[in-house]
Length: 297
Ligand SMILES: [Zn+2]
Image (cartoon, rainbow, N blue to C red; front, top):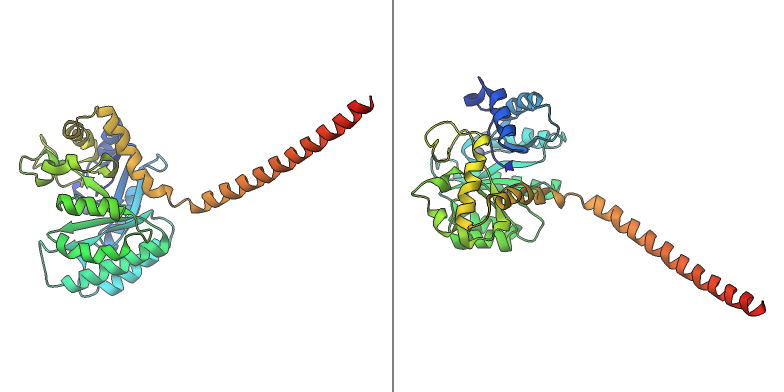
């Protein structure tokens, strides 16, 4: 299982991060994806990275969160772009729009999002998108990116069924589902079943949004199985099947990155085909030779 969204570098985990990581591994979590929120978070993420001896356990994302877009956002973006070029990051995030807290920099949020989506195309990286109270604003902004190769996750999905279906089927996005679907008042829980499982990925958004029965307390990746169970219940599938999906779906975001590998395989195939064809020709010639000599004999 994969936790596609967890902020393990935040102070909430400073005292017991090693135990948190142990519990995650014991619970069957094979990868944790760590989204940045600003420049400072990237430093904290680097320190976290050093703590995990299992290679590939963390995937790191760098980006400017909409709530962190302030007057100096252009300078901050410049440095985040430099970080993305360092090769340490697998994707861009979290980025997006947030109209819940503060609207004073909303125009800057729109601009920062466009800039970072363009980077995603330029660097061929997936994006983690945060959208709070801003689905009507993000849909027209993101539509021009459909079919251009942009891939990613709408994390902590909180839009409507129609928006979900458009994002998945037209836009090729995945929806991040977390502990909020275990809450009684979850609007998404009511229509989730209408969204094919192939578009669903699991996340905690730790330390926030703990699933029931831990609601109100600190969240952590080891609680992913509670979300898996809830999904199994909603979709009426076996838990094992949801576990497999929890691993397979998010990894699809990285398969498309192996364009170069695909090119190498293509050339290998062409060479094999040419070789086989030439050996068929040789076999044909050999048959002719045998026939002639057999006739002579
Ligand atoms: Zn987040």
